[in-house]
Length: 260
Image 1 (cartoon, one colour):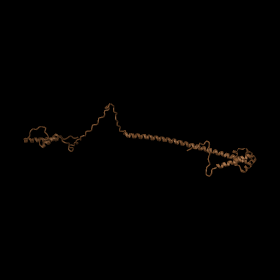
Image 2: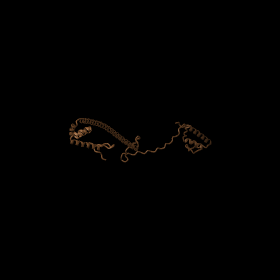
Image 3: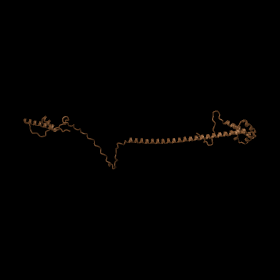
């Protein structure tokens, strides 16, 4: 900051003052006056000189290069004094303000969202566990169904083989009795049980069976005739009519049907 150029102004004022004093002496109107005079005393020119003496010259940035005067700063309001922690006899808790912490409402929302996320994750884990258990049970059921199908096929094969063997044995018996003489076959038929005799008789040639039946005893022939007639009636009643399927009788090990 440049210094104010006061010395040239003071020198000019002193020269003017000396000139005025010389004029006053020449006119004889000069009288001693107090050293300190107010700005309103004397002629206008002297008042101007005194005014220049009493106050400093204003700063002129164009001439002196001085900076403009600083603006007055407004007084700041006084900060309130912190409360005394022992004013009520109890120490007041210190209030700490952390700019990183969210407000209370936002913190509550974040906590609820966190709890909700934990619940959703827990349910998702439960669903995954249930899905895994269901898949394991499904695989176990598929394996069980496969075992049952294999067992069913095995049983069906055994049944087919047994029926085939029984049919072969029955065919052999029929062929054997048909080749025998009627009297010899009649003596055997008289002593056979009806459960064994009826399947053999039904497979035999009717003409050959007629000869054997004629050679049988009257009681055995009558009993065989009644059994064949009764069995034929039962077969006719049990046969399904039209497109109806045959009725399957429940087995002893089958559970009773569920009632609504």
